[in-house]
Figure 1: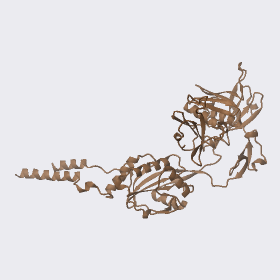
Figure 2: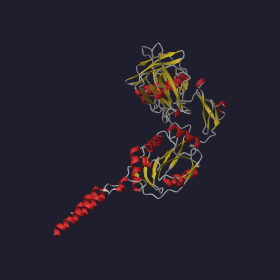
Figure 3: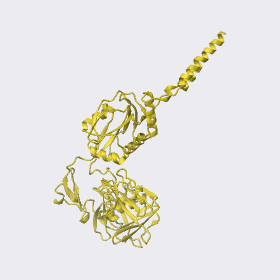
Figure 4: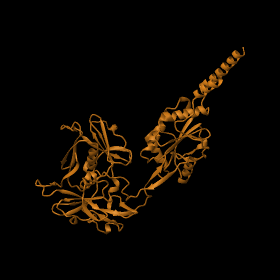
Length: 501
């Protein structure tokens, strides 16, 4: 009977387990790093019994902001008896960029006030090592076409345009705000009501919401200013917005609530909509196809191109007002450049199915391949690129293709200057968050942002109970295990006495 009751007692005892990854590590080395106020934070001086240490960087577009907001929720939902016993500290993974000023802006943006640490790269790297953190910088080549679909194509993508009369010109890829709007509408299946005026393209309606003739409200174009991190009314028409410089735009009904526009995350171009009834819509322009290249090249050159959408995809109807004749004696034909054979070929698929194109050509179907100039035909070496590149395009579309180590001069695409600043880079990393006990031993670890604040709080409470950090009311009364043990012994004694009698 005693053995049976003891087994029941042990089976009923709760197992100690954490929601996060339970660790068995030695105490981390003490460290001292400057915080966002340029004051020194010393781990050994921390008065809290439990310290939460997170690793992030301010340019992280996805995981890090989520971690910060999760920790903010953890801080706000701690039990009252733990409010003064748990401290928070965040350490940057990008000390080159995350200066004290940058960290201050990040904290203000997220509404948090715990220390955010930075410092000399070698000093911060020593702290990473004590926690088993590994990071690696990946240099972003300014001529690398894989940086982003929109940005990377500006230097190398073009459309060769051959008129029915046989004249040719090469158009650089320069998407406008209207290119972005049309591409987003295509991906999200929005309906657009636009018109051409002497002032450019006018957006009159979106998704069936047409602006009234009495101008009670209208569609207002908003641009996201990455520097001020604010949405601003566009000072120019949608055709004059350079989508490579302003990748996030929005259409807001003038009578709608502007606060419904949210902060864009990441570099993927996006379009937001706030309808007059304050319903919203959002679309990323994540892909880059022959349709985007065609629309962006002609938009950038100021040449009217009529591209219609159908159940079979986009098809080009006319260029500069010139469409195929009714007898179909000729039509606009899409050609692709074959890098291997250095020759033009007819495209076997429509423009929507050409992914990440570099160079296309639109010409009447009667135009022979040999009559279409090779890409770069309008480029010549000259002194305009300061001897460090070559010119692509012609007329208003001309721009320098700068050599490696050189970039466009500010405000002048016809001049190449040496790159003075350090090259751009991004980080490869794991965003770990640790719960440290009084001895500063990492007891629990969470990886990236795949956790809930409520579970995190549960782990803090459990650690506080295990280490007797807070007074537990249950300590004043016998535990369930103790009561069961007493019951077992008592029942055994009664059983033995009965048998003896």
